[in-house]
Length: 336
Image 1 (cartoon, rainbow, N blue to C red):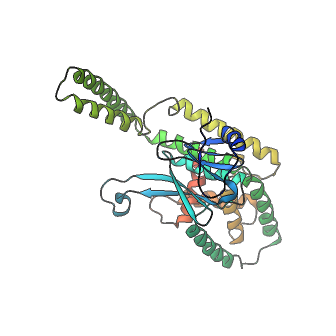
Image 2 (cartoon, rainbow, N blue to C red):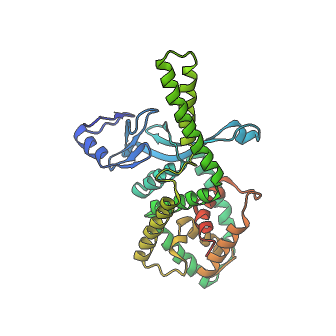
Image 3 (cartoon, rainbow, N blue to C red):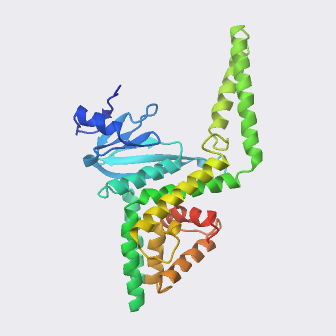
């Protein structure tokens, strides 16, 4: 049965069109992307609201941090949100459980609806200032080879950006593999043990409650808390978070990217899996700054820059976002 989503804003889509659009929308996390509208979640229900695409001006990611993330004291935690700006600056903020789903949603919107901006207004201003500084560096006269390299890379970037979601999925799959490899087995077994203990406490609590035990409610609450907390900690090995599933996801993402890049016949001497639009843009930047002339040299510059960046290096927010978009793929392949 079709549950009609509630509209946000003034514009309304006829129910017959809305029904088909929602039915065939691309579901990412609790939200969805259709041809006519974006479908957004409420706190409890998935795809509960809709906003016509024609009303949307911006779609971007916002990450909230706990107090410990700013002060260095106490617990550190993050909460990813999807923010949709529509009509006269109205905002709808949607909570997601996983940040990579927000990245995938934003990438799909950018791919399907190029007219919708995918950064916040503040980030747009920062990017404009950064572009201005980059333009000043471009005053260095370029050789004919360097000019040709910049043009080739610009054409490649334009073609690759059309399927940005493929590269975003590859990055997310690489992040997942890195996280799995860096998580100690002890924590996985501990999480499993706590879930089993929680289930046992819950069962005992229910049994005690039926027998009117005064402490039954505490066992029930502890059991439910343990199950929900540790099963959602992303260290449990369910069907989508075990070694085999993670390797399969990464292989599928690499195959999809390689297939698309091969279909473009770009002729670039760079492995297809590394040709994220951000990588190509950084290669262009290296050439314009006089640090490289050929495509091969530019790629080597990008690789060396990524190798030098670690947790002790301070970078701007914009560069951090670029690094997080491409470095996981380089790491899982050992820069080969």
